[in-house]
Length: 450
Image (cartoon, rainbow, N blue to C red; front, side, top):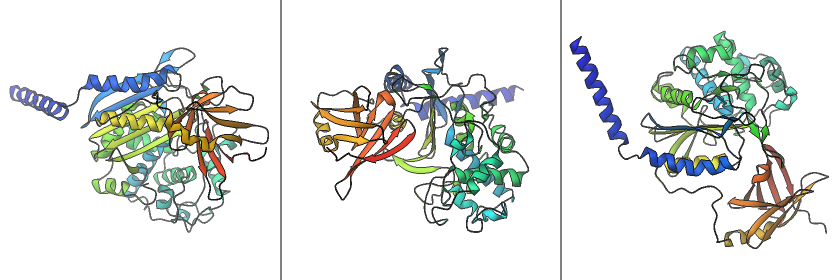
């Protein structure tokens, strides 16, 4: 017994030394102060709320909740708050498929018609095409749900009605329909409901006790409400109906549970090293099997993000998981991608700056005068872009004039309606725009009539 205690003391001491050496150069309080400086102003303006986790060398250095999980009852977000994770669900679905391949239940090169005999063009589409968004099947329209949960078979019938928009394997086209079909395949070959399979084979092994399938008919304790902003009256409760297809975006989790998942993935706890390598092998548009692989700040980034009404999320692994950043937001702030870039800069100890940074130099907006004018939204409404004294303004029909923030070349953001707009000039000289008013896509061009 004494020998066992001595070995335990030595192990703990060695771990503490290793932890200290790996993180000696990191000032955690300084990191927290910088993250606060980035996030708190956005929280104060009502644009953002959620939870963030940062881990280095596998050790959690920072995790914190910001803003409110329930704005009506002033309940704050914490690291234990549960959020809908939207399309991060796809990574878990893809891993489930690879697990079943390891068990000999399927092969990702199988044709779809092996599992769905009556599916249109099922002899042309492979499981691999579904995993990599190259099936050519467009996303189903969740608005057909009438804002109510649906059975998986109902969603599959919606998918069957869709026509191929590209030859399978030839073009990347992000598709929730593909992951709906993967969900059905998982259920068929495992003999289990999707939610039961992922619980038994992923969540329980990883001790992810706060992760599961979300149902809008079964409210969870400690779950954040989602908030969206599509008009001038502030953020309001907003959410997509759930469950629908389950494996494309219907799971919930916490930042701490997702940390456990990513650590298990990189430590080969859930699949073999060979299968992990296969999952991280990209095909088209930097998309692998449930993961996206790009570079940020000059470093390799493996991630999958999610976004839907009232929700923005991402789990981001840098340098073969030396750095892990996870955020779950319960607001659909359309500049979340800029927040994550600055979070990564802070964690990587690179230069960073707050969003909407004030400056006296307004010359950088002068070139935007090219896009000044009136643009149609639909038959009955329009908006006007103007540049006055070095500031850009947006004004919708019958609404107050709002300052617009230039956040990238030809891109503006309007805080009052959580909208971003990109302008471009075509080869024919026509000024066109692509806008997200909230999460709703609108396109159009400048009005040339007098």
